[in-house]
Image 1 (cartoon, rainbow, N blue to C red):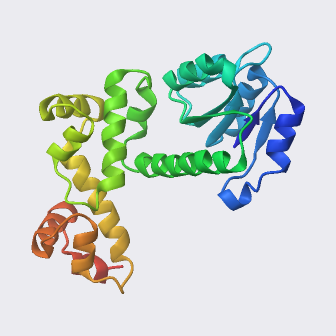
Image 2: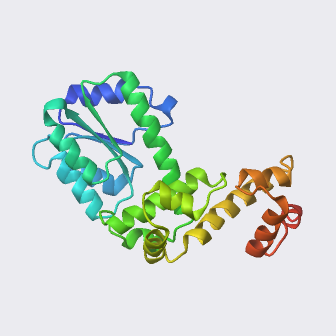
Length: 248
């Protein structure tokens, strides 16, 4: 994570008096203005940016906009005083994950950072499934892109449930046809194929543990019928779950 704030006391306090290691975060840089921060983001490529919005020179909003225009994959948390809440609303339009209103306490910081760390982990898992050329060429501000990302995140979060395409469409308040068409256009895959891909990825991961029963893996990847799970797995990998495990 990179910390950005033009007030030295706030920046140093965030850097030195928070147990970032305990939160699974490493501070890899800091900056006192947006221009300096943008350069560090380009060089270091952090997972998280914690930035003030009101700064001289390049503001936090200009920094966030520049990051999004350059399609840099980074989760952003904004800091702002309550009287500048309009800045926070603007930052959220640029897909900031969350915000903290100064002065904030450790509990508020803990809650926000837990959410952000979880989002970073989801992003890394999503990157394993979505081709890089697709991720890098999409403009993150477009509505269709946001819809496709919501579908991806929902599947990654709920693949272990008896999740249907209708469930996904209902969750993001779209018709199946509209959601399916947008997702296909944005990713080149159908929603059903993507759901299967995620489930098979996790099935293969769990098969590496010989102590997990195959029927348990079926249930944990959203299949109530182990025989149907085995059929889908073989169609996807060319091997039965047992054959796949035996070859490891």
